[in-house]
Length: 285
Ligand code: NAD
Image (cartoon, rainbow, N blue to C red; front, side, top):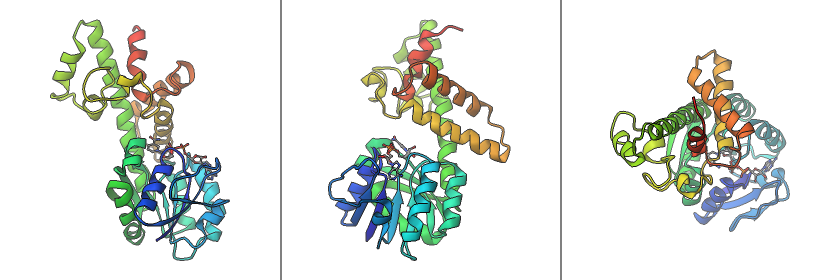
């Protein structure tokens, strides 16, 4: 299959490489001039999508996605399927679908490691026809793909998931900082909570306390992993979406405010999102 791939950054580069390794003819473009093994380089987005059966984008945000879509759509073959894997606002996803009906919003979970290993989870929104075209490619780049509904449903699933993740990471970090002050050993705290009703992915799989639980960014001086600023981006998307449908999300809003403070005023920029633990440890009530 001929694939045009736009946005060859931390995630897209690995995803395009995996598609090429699986035997697809992949042509890529990135404004930063990134070169990826096995992927032909095009001089522009328009050149990358020419003759492609499938076009995949993996871009930083909705504004850039809309601009790229406006540029490439006139150059796409009529039967081509447009798969956007970026994390963007629901409105941008729906706009792309309105402009190109054979399209699917398919944000991912699994991070750079998952992109590299081809073990991402895709949450997809779009028609059955678009999902049927995209699914074999999701199988190469990932281990699971859920067809969540019509256009925008993939982005809706992603931002709801990450709103839960942001809030649970914060409360897990708070709990460790509280346990420290109460004189409770961190390992004991983990042993209890990870097998009790307070368990969560943040505690069990990505423990924010160094040396506790499976290996995580906490064991590597909080190098990301999943950077705090990316969590802030996703939390802002959740609040933008909540606002657009008048949904009450008080904890989501509070998590957004805390990550904003952390990233903008408290040296959190460039640190893993679990670095909230040393932040809370430094603070008093
Ligand atoms: P990134 O910044 O590393 O990659 C984005 C790439 O897009 C960059 O290489 C940039 O040069 C390129 N780009 C920007 N504007 C462009 C344009 N007009 N035309 C062509 N290329 C352009 O970001 P990333 O970490 O690869 O993330 C990509 C998307 O995936 C984001 O929406 C992010 O929220 C989402 N995501 C990231 C992770 C993660 O762990 N990094 C996890 C899940 C989802």
